[in-house]
Image 1 (cartoon, each protein chain N blue to C red):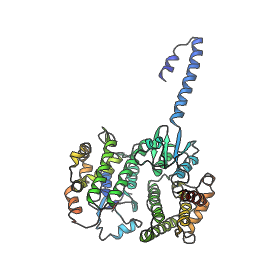
Image 2: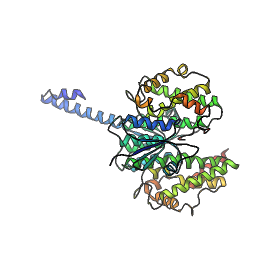
Image 3: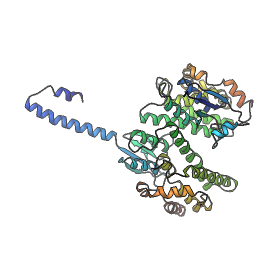
Image 4: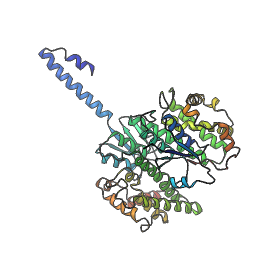
Length: 217
Length: 252
């Protein structure tokens, strides 16, 4: 039976982008469905009745919700290519910890009312992650790993954070910027991430919808 | 280890005896190093709903460990060094490798010691377990905690959210012995002491969160779960929590 893979997403969502990157890395063919979050599809509500949020990965009719959980699922099912998590339990725990870290921080900055506070939380987070990256090319070592895939989608949001923080990411965090460039050299990443301009128009310009960006939208 | 192979190439009798003793010492030293690497410690706080998950997982797998009680008002250097990002318990130390965040620790334990597995094998079942574990921590626990610390409209919202989330757990356990099936698994440890903790909050704060009739499946599961020997000997009971927090209140 051929695998049927569907991804329910939303263009500006960094969480949906994580899954696009992972599926591309693994060479998995899938059908992408863009959700209108002002009017959620019956399929979305049926597949994620608890949270009614994107992204949802649907594999042969079975839904997998929550982006980091779906990332692990993708890694476990399509395990012949481009492993995201290492095999050593200690390194796996570390990768899970840092991916969880950015999601915890995201919940904090998404809840802030003042733009400069949003920017501060985001850049604090980036500073900590830079320390973790050290001199490695990627968080995963020589190739993209779990943490890289979890973090890089926020690249599309950098124009928004730069505006909120009234600063330049490259000036503030050159190591992080260099890492984003290395990630963007990969087709699986560059083809999966929306233009910074589109995200800026959405969030700052209110184009598409006035919805705030929430965890897993 | 390499020079023990060199020793095998010097075969006089006396030398052989010396080599044998040296090899024995070498082997013992290696075994000690391995054991040292393998030492397991848990930094925790008794009555914590997150810490008991870790101890249960280790006991379930028959792993010996040293438990270190943390005074959360005066965190130890070891805790701050082992979890500099969050500075929270529980932390598992395996040799000198720290692992933080209870759900991540549970997965680490399950992946390191493969006997008596807690997670199912099938990836989609694993994903479901992870989903509900996250739900417990992000919805049930946070709502109940918020309900215990707020008043007015915010408290009402938190109470409603707690009740709704417990109803979902109740539905999930309907028709099952344990969340893990016939025997307890990952999700049982995660839900673990939640019912006791919620009942403690109810009494301590004076709000209604856990309707035993409405949550009959969850209530029955809690009774079965508490009867499991490794759980029974250490699960934080409502009375323990009440005594502790009332004492804290009186001390102020």
